[in-house]
Image (cartoon, rainbow, N blue to C red; front, side, top):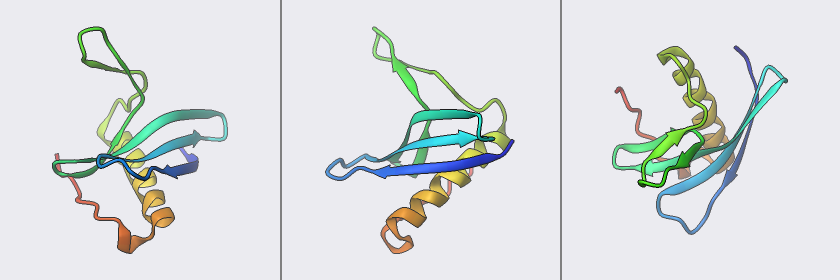
Length: 96
Protein backbone atom coordinates (compact mmCIF):
# COMPACT_ATOMS: atom_id res chain seq x y z
CA UNK A 1 0.00 0.00 0.00
CA UNK A 2 1.25 3.44 -0.91
CA UNK A 3 0.12 6.57 0.90
CA UNK A 4 0.04 9.15 -1.90
CA UNK A 5 -0.73 12.25 0.12
CA UNK A 6 -1.33 13.41 3.69
CA UNK A 7 -3.05 16.76 4.32
CA UNK A 8 -2.86 18.18 7.84
CA UNK A 9 -5.12 20.96 9.10
CA UNK A 10 -3.82 22.09 12.52
CA UNK A 11 -6.42 23.04 15.14
CA UNK A 12 -5.76 25.88 17.57
CA UNK A 13 -7.48 26.52 20.87
CA UNK A 14 -8.19 22.89 21.75
CA UNK A 15 -6.10 21.25 24.46
CA UNK A 16 -6.44 17.70 23.10
CA UNK A 17 -7.33 17.89 19.41
CA UNK A 18 -4.22 19.01 17.51
CA UNK A 19 -5.19 18.48 13.84
CA UNK A 20 -7.57 16.98 11.33
CA UNK A 21 -5.98 14.86 8.62
CA UNK A 22 -6.96 13.50 5.20
CA UNK A 23 -5.03 10.54 3.79
CA UNK A 24 -4.96 9.62 0.11
CA UNK A 25 -4.08 5.98 -0.62
CA UNK A 26 -2.63 4.97 -3.99
CA UNK A 27 -4.32 7.99 -5.62
CA UNK A 28 -7.62 6.09 -5.48
CA UNK A 29 -9.06 6.33 -1.94
CA UNK A 30 -9.31 9.20 0.55
CA UNK A 31 -9.88 8.80 4.28
CA UNK A 32 -11.05 12.01 5.97
CA UNK A 33 -11.67 12.96 9.59
CA UNK A 34 -8.53 11.31 10.91
CA UNK A 35 -7.50 13.20 14.06
CA UNK A 36 -4.27 13.81 15.89
CA UNK A 37 -5.02 13.77 19.61
CA UNK A 38 -2.77 14.74 22.52
CA UNK A 39 -3.43 11.97 25.03
CA UNK A 40 -1.95 10.96 28.36
CA UNK A 41 0.97 9.20 26.60
CA UNK A 42 1.58 11.81 23.91
CA UNK A 43 0.21 12.30 20.42
CA UNK A 44 -1.68 9.54 18.67
CA UNK A 45 -3.63 9.04 15.46
CA UNK A 46 -7.39 8.52 15.89
CA UNK A 47 -9.14 7.01 12.89
CA UNK A 48 -12.64 8.22 11.90
CA UNK A 49 -15.30 6.98 14.31
CA UNK A 50 -19.02 7.30 14.97
CA UNK A 51 -20.34 8.00 18.44
CA UNK A 52 -22.97 5.48 19.49
CA UNK A 53 -26.03 6.21 21.65
CA UNK A 54 -24.32 4.69 24.70
CA UNK A 55 -21.39 7.11 24.35
CA UNK A 56 -18.89 4.59 22.97
CA UNK A 57 -17.16 5.05 19.63
CA UNK A 58 -17.24 2.68 16.65
CA UNK A 59 -14.33 2.95 14.22
CA UNK A 60 -15.51 3.57 10.66
CA UNK A 61 -12.08 2.86 9.17
CA UNK A 62 -9.10 1.22 10.82
CA UNK A 63 -5.92 -0.70 9.92
CA UNK A 64 -6.21 -4.47 10.18
CA UNK A 65 -2.61 -5.18 11.14
CA UNK A 66 0.29 -3.63 13.04
CA UNK A 67 2.36 -2.89 9.91
CA UNK A 68 -0.45 -0.89 8.31
CA UNK A 69 -1.14 0.99 11.55
CA UNK A 70 2.55 1.91 11.82
CA UNK A 71 2.59 3.05 8.17
CA UNK A 72 -0.39 5.34 8.82
CA UNK A 73 1.04 6.69 12.08
CA UNK A 74 4.45 7.42 10.56
CA UNK A 75 2.94 9.19 7.55
CA UNK A 76 0.43 11.23 9.57
CA UNK A 77 2.69 12.22 12.46
CA UNK A 78 5.60 12.87 10.09
CA UNK A 79 3.51 15.30 8.05
CA UNK A 80 2.20 16.89 11.26
CA UNK A 81 5.80 17.47 12.37
CA UNK A 82 6.63 19.01 8.99
CA UNK A 83 3.57 21.30 8.93
CA UNK A 84 3.81 22.44 12.54
CA UNK A 85 7.58 22.62 12.75
CA UNK A 86 9.70 20.02 14.52
CA UNK A 87 10.40 22.31 17.48
CA UNK A 88 6.69 22.85 18.25
CA UNK A 89 5.74 19.17 18.35
CA UNK A 90 6.39 16.85 21.28
CA UNK A 91 5.55 13.38 20.02
CA UNK A 92 6.10 10.52 22.43
CA UNK A 93 6.47 7.25 20.56
CA UNK A 94 4.06 4.63 21.89
CA UNK A 95 5.47 1.12 21.93
CA UNK A 96 2.09 -0.51 22.67
